[in-house]
Length: 551
Ligand code: GLU
Figure 1 (cartoon, helix red, strand yellow):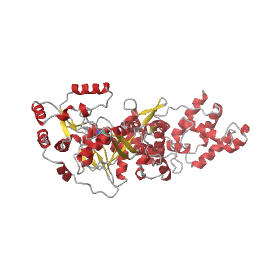
Figure 2 (cartoon, helix red, strand yellow; figure 1 turned 45 degrees about the vertical axis):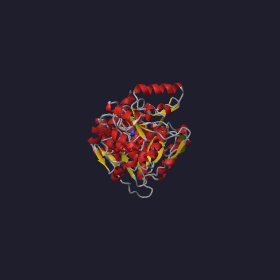
Figure 3 (cartoon, helix red, strand yellow; figure 1 turned 180 degrees about the vertical axis):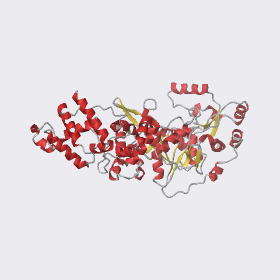
């Protein structure tokens, strides 16, 4: 058959050749070793934590090599597309500090010389490459109906054969030009299929950046490259896009590994060099003793919006994901306390092929460390920004007196051993409730080992000794004096040496005061809290505790 004639019959409107596009999108001039990667999500409604993970790995690999990171939107499956899908993806990536060089850099804003970066805007490009395959006899139209395809499937199942349109099942492979023309003139719908050049007994192998060498049987199926509406399948769009966009490393979910023989075959048939591949294992979660993928139906933490709603600091989440990618991140963090996460060199070959276990407790821990490393001012800004969105009562309280809130966030924020009590902004309300009368429930938490009578006596005496101008040392010295007055040991050491001689020690005394002022027996530095609250409030709370103890 004259394949050129067939190509013209199928694609009369396509007048460009692949060479024209190669001219339009010239090879990138990159420094030695610079990598071009991309994140290529479908706009199906929300950004999954696994998507953020893949985007982060791709972004790191590009930027730590001086390369480029692209955001491409794969919207060829219109059925799955959700309105606002692109915006959600962008919101997610940008709020976590993922820097995008090319493609969608903002809502409706595409940057870069290799666009358009939305597949639905690239139909003519795919059709041009498809036309080229037809010209070479490497692709053909297939008119089989759904029913015919199901019949093939059933027969293959019954005979326990490889499913798909291949070999003797690939009926439309042998259609003549006349038959094809007749069908087209009759208006029959058709898809375009690759005329696979693979053979059953041959293997294809490639080196995966994460898993190392992988060998698989060659593809023998005549897969669809263009659907009946002329829109490409994922396979074909991937090959054409990553070729023209100059992607050097395709980093994607490992559900695509099984499609590698198809992709490599397409690159081969088009006469172009494939990129390097790395396949990421999905993020897993422990469930009833076993492991399973994080699921968007079962797990709220599957959607990245969850982290924003809960108020996890973005860099804490990113650092946790880097931890999940490379366990060496933890050592890096220990050795470089103040370095930005982007200074860590991510290594793909250190990633696990079985999928990291996602653990919210560990995430919270990482975020606690992160928040502990911020200045009080930064904590204030971030906590207030979160509260403005998600807890307006807290927002009003935090911003009522900025200096007061900053002083509060400064409690125990000493650089050597900062207190680590909050891992996310939604914990601020509970952690600092005692700082605001509106949130403080005024309950006195009884101090173990101290009788009510003793506690009451201590508080009554303390009222007379209270000097709100005293510095931390003088303040603590006064508690020692108070301990002595009520027959408690001045020093913990003293008490430990001779525990039968005292009902308790100065620590118990300070805890009684702590319980009165904060309602709890654990809190940040009490002297700072009392200073921030001010004399009036402190005395009011002491009185309240005294009455509670009288009952
Ligand atoms: N659109 C594909 C997906 O969401 C992209 C896979 C790839 O990165 O090539 O799974």
